[in-house]
Image (tube, rainbow, N blue to C red; front, side, top):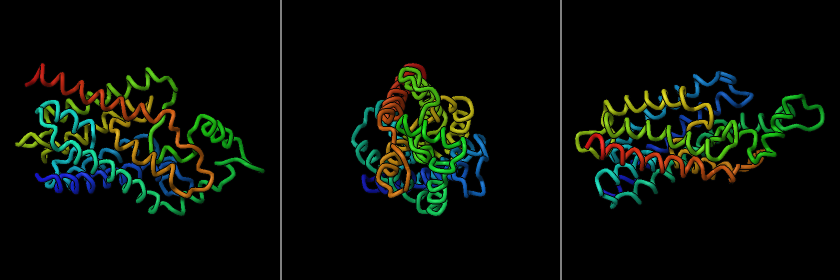
Length: 264
C-alpha cells in the first residue's frame, strides 16, 4: 500500500465511520428526528454497523485501521512507523468530513432542536431546560453528544481508566482475530469480528464515558462542533477532550505490549 492509498482509504473509511456513527447519535438525540429516544441499544448497534461498513469500504486501500490507537498498536507490534503519519492524517481528516456530513444530513433537526425552548431554556421553558443549562455550565452544549463523548461522572482518573480498558479490549481483538493475511489491517472476517466487539464494548463499558476508544472519532467531530454555525450550541468541553485522545492511545500501546508478550 502506498502512502497515498493509505491516506485516501483512511479518509474515506473514517468519514463513513463518523457519518454513520454520529448519524445514529443525531437520530436518537435530536427532537425532530423519527428515531428520537430510540435508546442506547440503537446507538451501540449503530456504531457497530458503522464500523462494519467503514472497514469493508476502506480495507482494500488502507487495511482499514480507522483509529489512531489501532495504527499505534500495529506500529509497536511490527516496529514499522513509516506509514503512521499517513494513517493518522487520513483518520483525522475523515473524522472532520464525517462530522460535517452529519450536520448536513440533520441540518434542519439541529436548528429545530437548538431553537426549542425546552432544550436551550429561555422564557416559557420547561424543566428539561435545567439539564441543558447544567450541561452547558460543565462545558458541554446540548448537542455535543452527537459529535463527541463525555463522562456521566467527571473523574479524570476513572474516565481515563475506562477509555484505556475499552481500547485494550478492542485492539487485542483486532490483533488476535481481526487482521488480514498480511497483518497490516483488518480482513473480511476481521471486520465482522471487530464490529461485534465494538457493540460489546458499547453495551458493557460504554456507560461511564460513551466509549470513544478512538482518538480521531472524538477529536475530529469535537473540532467540527466548535466551528459549526449552530445556534445555542454551547461549549465543546475542551477541558475533557484530552481523555478520549490520551486514554485510547495508552490502551492501544498496552494492547500491543500484551500481544507481543503473550501471543507473538
